[in-house]
Each structure stands twice: as C-alpha cells, then as structure tokens.
Amino acid sequence: MIQFGVMANTHPAPGADLTQMVDEVIAEAQQAERCGFDSFFLTEHHQEPSGYFPSPLPLAAAIAARTSRIRIGTGIAILPLYHPTRLAEDCAVVDIISKGRLILGVGQGYQEGDFAAFGLKVSDRVSLFEEGIEILRRAWTEEKVYFVGKRHTLQNIMVTPKPVQKPHPPIWVAALGDEPMKRAGRLGDALLADSFQLPERLKRRAALYRATAESRGRPHKVVVFREGYVAPTREQAIAEYEAGLLSTHRYYWRHGSYYQDIKKEEDLDLKRISLERLILGSPEDCVERVQTWHREVGADYFLIRFRHPGGPAHERVLRALQLFGETVIPRFR
Image 1 (cartoon, rainbow, N blue to C red):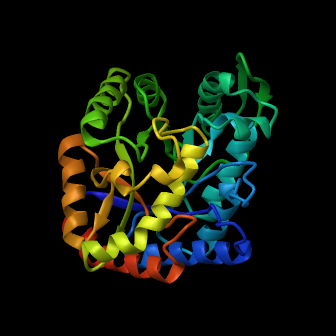
Image 2 (image 1 turned 90 degrees about the vertical axis):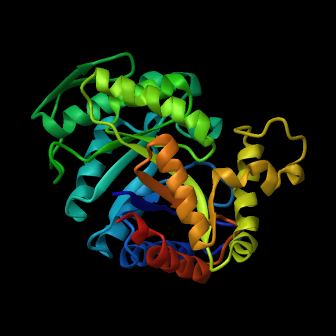
C-alpha cells in the first residue's frame, strides 16, 4: 500500500493575515483527514520578513487537538537549531496530545539566516545534527542520559514524560546528496527525499540509502516529497497551481539554494522546474506520476505540497484535497 501525506504551506504571502493563515492550515489538515490522507506535515524557517512560521511543534499540537486519525509531522524541523533535550520534551508532549501520532522529520538546514538567528554556524550543522539524533533517541528510551560529545554534554539528564509511541516517534531524515543519504540510512527511520530530484538521480541515491540502512540492520522507507495539485483537467490544474509554484521556486533561487544557472528570477518558469518533477494534472496524470515514482525509485510514501505563498487559494486547495482523496488515493489502496 502506498501512503500519502500533505506538506502544508506555513509561509505567508506578504501582508497576509497570520491568524487566518493558521485557521486555514488547520482546516486543510482536517480536510486531509476526511479525504483519506495519512499525514499532514509542517515546515520551518527563521528571519523571514513575511513571517514564515518558525515553530512547527506548537502548530502540530493545535492540529492534533482538532483531528483524531491523521499523523502529524515536521517536514522538517531544523535539528541543529534545537537543544535536543528541549526538543525531546516538546515532541513527547505533542505525541501525548496527539495520542501517538507524531512523526519527527528532521534536516540539517542550509540557510545562513536560520543559523544566525541562534548564533550558530552552518559549518557546524553535521555534528549538531548527528549528536541531536542520538540524544533524542536516548532521551525517549533511557531513564537517565549521560552524553559527552563535540557539541553537547549531558550529565544524567532525565526527560519526562516519555512519548506514547514505543520505542519513540519515528525520525524521518531529510537528505539530498550521497553523504546525507548514507547519514539517513545510519540514523533515520525513513528517508525524506526533497522535491528537486528527478527519478533517475533519486533512484541511485535511494539505493545508497537502503544499502546503508540494511548494513546497519536498520529499517528503511523512502518518502518522496513532491509539489503537486489535482483538478479535473491538466490545463485547469496548471492554471490554478503555476503562480504559487513559481513563487516558492523563486524563493529558493533568491536564497541561493537552486537554479544558480539562472540570472533573473523572471526566467524561472514551469518548463525550467520540469513537470516530470511534479505530481500535477488530472487525476489520471497524478496516478501515472505516483506509479512512475513508485516503480523507478521504490517510493512507498508521498508528501504533496498543494499550496504555496502565491496560491492556490484555500477553497481551491480544499477541493483539490477532496478530488485527490476520491480519485487518486483509492487507486493505491
């Protein structure tokens, strides 16, 4: 069985009403639950002028209180920015509120502004990340934690209460390059693959991830994050989704993350992004894309971002979630 989740938009458009945005995110989570999605994920960035939500866990708790079945995840929490003891405590509380529905997706981070907000250096992210995962697991499963590392020293620390899930909430590790793929295999319960990789590249890297996990006797699961949207026709889906998609990818370009061969953000169009990368179009188009990623990469879980700062509007997203739940999800159950 293939599973499906929603990657929420918590990056408001300039001038947006933030309380309205939160209400809409919660309503979209409730709609996703009604429509048969398996999970709902929240993102994180810092120092964004428009008010990008920096704290996914409080919002996850609010969603947990208003839903009953759907799993709630961070996609991702930038682990090096957190003290792992505090993160372990906060996650345990959210897991209790949700009655065992939390998934902790973590990544190393890449934006200088995120690290500068906490007086940290991007160059320290790998050691902070690796130590953080070890401390999280131990804090959730051991009565007392004694740890001496390069970045953290803990002297017989007790984390209570413990999470509902045993041994602990699953930790999904975001990765892009070869070394991060190996790290995900060593440390994670699943690989969270970013939205930029095309099937042929991700196929090789997913194999590297699986081989590393198997060599350590660890479980492995490939979760593919895709941007996508469904409408009755491909033309309608593109018309409703394109502006929002471009707003997000131009944000990535401005932050120096991708598309550095492009000189002006206006030159970044749908053709450059590549439809092959997306789950976008009619219901049949979306089914075909999911089948392709499942066949070529072995992906058995998809997180789909239906909304961006530039749209589609909330009501359209609710309709798209319903259509996806009625026409795409049942094909894989």
